[in-house]
Amino acid sequence: MKDRPEQIKKRIFDSPTPSFFKKWSVAIRPFALPASTMPVIFGTLMSVTIGGASFDLLLFLAALFGMAILHTGSNLLNDAFDYEKGIDKQVNPVSGAVVRGWISPRDVLRAGYLFLGLGMLIGLFLVSRVGVSILWIGMAGVAIGIFYTWGPLPLKFNALGDLAVFLNFGVLGALGAWTVQTGTLSWAPVIWAVPMSLLVVGILHSNNWRDIDSDRAGGIQTMASRLGDTLSEGYFVFLLVCPFVVIMALILLSMAADLDPKMPPTFLVTFLAIPLAFKLIKKGRMRRQPKHPLDFISLDGQTAQLNLLFGLLCTAALVLNSLMSFFLG
Image (cartoon, rainbow, N blue to C red; front, side, top):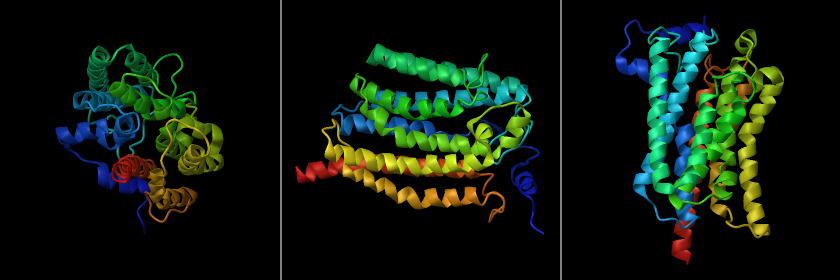
């Protein structure tokens, strides 16, 4: 007889005496950081290769680590608030240090505030070097992170979580990185980061899709709980396919219209990620009879891998375009 998913999760992830490192690595969830740091890398590289900026290593590292620290702080606050509200009761494959009883909600809350404070200090350093333009972007990002699960109208619990991660872990990250290097605002990093942003939403949605029943029982409204199981599958397909459609549309528009800057054809390299996207779509479709017990349960982690691959291919497209411009004149 095959083990049930719950039995597999218990066998893999339960540990009577976890180490300090294991406790906090589960709480911090480093596997999720590429979702927030990849737009920073992309926006920085775009500012240099497309925007003609002079690369500033110190500012890049500050932006990268600042984003990672703020993301971590937001995750920790999210875990603490969810647990205190009685919402987070289930141990998931790659998270749940509070639910497991490894770390107290108070310690996680303190750590969350500490990370947010450190992130804001890095933000103030960037403001001192770049100017007020980066201040507004940073303030918007911090506000979204704080109000994601806190306040009278938490974004996560009112079907606005998808919009929050679309902005914070996509377009704002890329725009902020561009602004850090160039000192100016531009529409280009916002539009070019949309495909990556949609995949980040896909990570969140696959998590919420899995948790529809528990979220509804807890009175939580997410896009998944509002759509229901069947429409959530269609939404997941949209989030995984649309990035490639947007890339193709931007390339065609760049060829047909007088866009400035133009998205180079090298971005077609992102289509190498399509097989993985369709593999995940198939796993979502087979959620009731999965080939492997954890296929649907761990769909969010697998979607995060797709997002990482897609982001790396986007950065590769920028590098390839620069190399072609250099060698072909």
